[in-house]
Length: 191
Image (cartoon, rainbow, N blue to C red; front, side, top):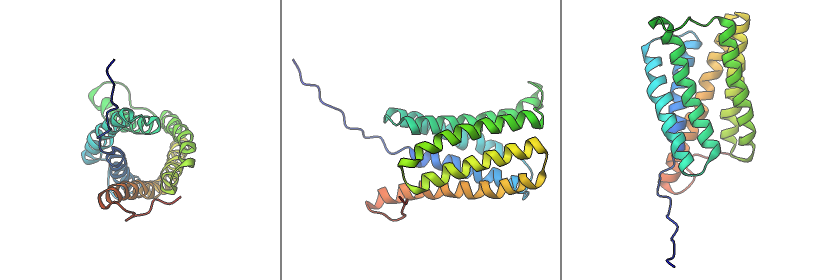
């Protein structure tokens, strides 16, 4: 009987890629939500390629590592970005009606509920993960409320809160990369 040797996992940590795809796309969209520029192809392109596809790749790699939380989070938010771009683009191509604000409110509310559920998974981890998922839950709830009520001020507040959320994720990603590269804590993740 031959001995089966365990293969060493030689994959790089996919979390920084997923976090950066989420962070940069979230920041750019929420600069728009805060009122600094109009929705444009730059945001949609980031949503497809970095927020969408790169996060999906990170999620698949997390699955390979056996990380269910990372797989669910990254593939879900990758799908969020792809679906959001689809919501914006498909009606312009005659492929479905543009959703009204109530439909968008429910769409955002469902993403908020998913995020709130995932937030509980961060309670055993580093502080920065709690900040990312806690602020993302608040962001989705603010955006849903803005859509349900038509209140532009809430939408603007959500934009600023979303910028903060994106920077939390950006910090976490860069901390993971630098801490691994230097073999010590360069940027703390908190407890």
